[in-house]
Image (cartoon, rainbow, N blue to C red; front, side, top):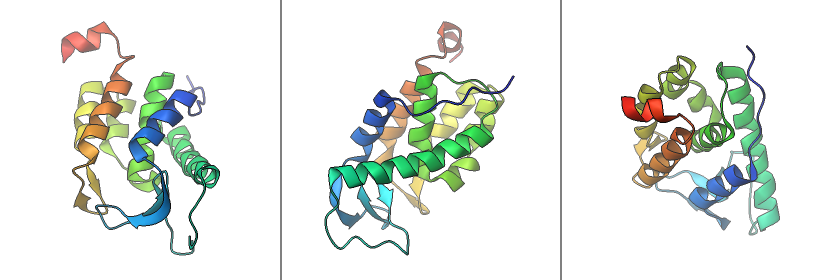
Length: 158
């Protein structure tokens, strides 16, 4: 059965913005990557000499989310609820679509091995080869959001 394409929900967008935070000025994150807006990774050809507005940051975020949505559309083989989808988009955005596409989280979800997927999800705390202490709480929140719709049988099995 094909997966019905989902899109980020307003709640999912708010969740992502909460965890990414907003910066009008480019800055280096704890992994020494240059970001701006709501966690937009500045590519080599991009330059932000002036502060970005909230609306410009929204556009960048939507473009970044679209890249993540394409990966989910290609890689996820099982139906997802909206909250599960939103949580996965948050993870994909944080890791980057290319790394996310190779993540063991996707493998386990497609096998419907959700306990294993969530365990792998919680250790996805490296960016650019550097462990990020700030990602621990975000990963816990993403997992909690994903787990919301798994049902009582999953909760008993954990």
